[in-house]
Image 1 (cartoon, rainbow over the protein chains, first blue to last red):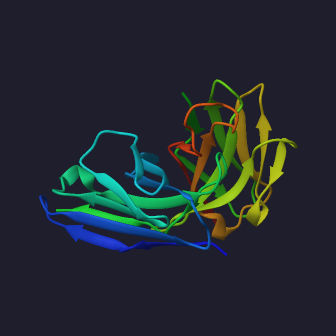
Image 2 (image 1 turned 90 degrees about the vertical axis):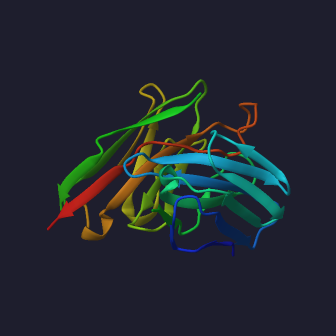
Length: 112
Length: 119
C-alpha cells in the first residue's frame, strides 16, 4: 500500500534562518506531488506541484522554493524565513489526473 | 477558474443530531468534488468523492454527499452525529480529466468548517 512520510512534525525557526521540509512517498511510481500551506482560518493554499523529477510549478509568488530530486521525494525550502512563513505545511500525492490527493501528517512551522 | 465556498465556518450540533455541512462551487465545467476531514495537527483524510455517475455518494464514517449540478452544491450530511465527528471539514474541487490545461489533479479548497458535537 502507499504511504507518505513528512518530517519534521513541528519546527520552530528564527526569522532569517533557512528551511528544509522533506516528503517521501512509498508504494507508487511517478506520483504527482504537492505542497500546500494552511494558515489559521484560511483553508489550504497550493504552493507547488510537480509531475516528475525536476519539474516544479509554483502557484503563488513567495519566499519558498521546491525541488524534486527523486521520483518520490519532494522538498520545500527557503533561504531566509519570514514571520509570514509560519503555518501548517502539508505534502500530498496523487496518481493520474483529477483523482483524490493523499496527504501527509503535516509540519507545523513557527517562525519567531 | 474554480472556487469553493463553505457556508458557516463553525457548525455545532448535539450528539445524535443531523450533521449538514454546506459546500457550493463555481466552475466552468462540472468538476470533481471531494470532502476531507482534518483532526487537530494532522493531515487531511478523504471522506468521499464524486467524479461521475451516481450523484449521491457515500463515504467513510457514515457520511454522504449529493452532487446537485443545478445548485452547484455538494453538501455533506450524516444522519446522527457522534462525538468523534468533531473535526474540521474541507470541501474541494478539481477540474475533470477532459477539461484541458494543466490541471494535474490540483485541488481548490474551501475555507473549512469546524464541526463541534455537544453531548
